[in-house]
Length: 311
Image (cartoon, rainbow, N blue to C red; front, side, top):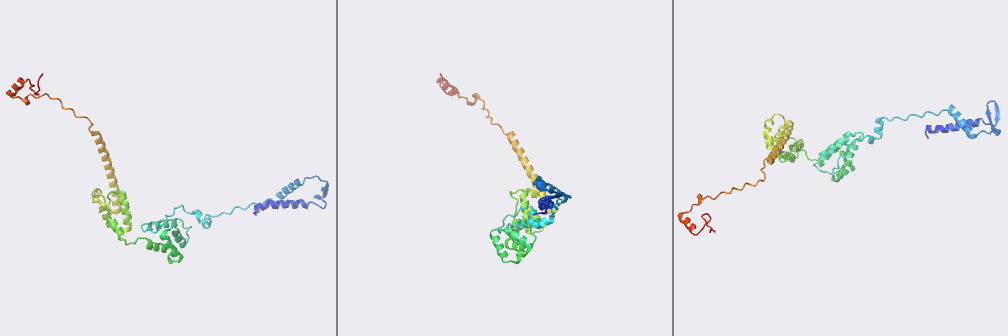
């Protein structure tokens, strides 16, 4: 029981002692020099106890409770590090894909860097990476951990060995071939630039070779307009310039196509039927009759124009 909770108990017992000390044999209470026989008294025992408690509280005040202990931030961090853990999300489980090896290790290193108090030792760090594995990658880690392999004694050694097992070799020629054959085609300029930068970071090529490869993969119209800048502004500035130019050119083309469609709609002829040709009178001159034919038609009562018999 704490000191604060024991104080009322001590006061209570002190009051009882104080009350009993004034009683003599036979129930007499000492009140100064005179002794009064309590056998004839009609005082309330409860009131006597209350009075004794008040006197005890006056002569023996309750001790002031000790202030609560102050826990520093460093002490709290040491005793319970998870309370101060960063909310950074853990990487997705890794099963051994060579394409995702470097990305997975990067995410793990970020978590470890943001929470150094949670992973104070090298084996803590290695254990964290292993807990994020699955499938064949987890089976591999289980074997080296159970054998206490030298790679699990140091985080850097574990990462190097991890890349040897699951990562792509640095001399992988497929990256260079993919970069050499990369063309913008139907991709937007932003998609092309992103894919080029991703491959370029893994290729190990020098800046001039990368610039030539990027320029060759550009859309022909963009490459033609930027030909003068190729050898004067460097790779990164050339990529940024190509993005700005291609974006602006695409915007202008869309605007031009919008105006062309509007003009076509406004200038489209209506569905008006062509006027019927006017009735032309019979050209007498175009069908002149010979005198003999004329005489025959008159004799037989035939029309001179349509050769029909008259009424």
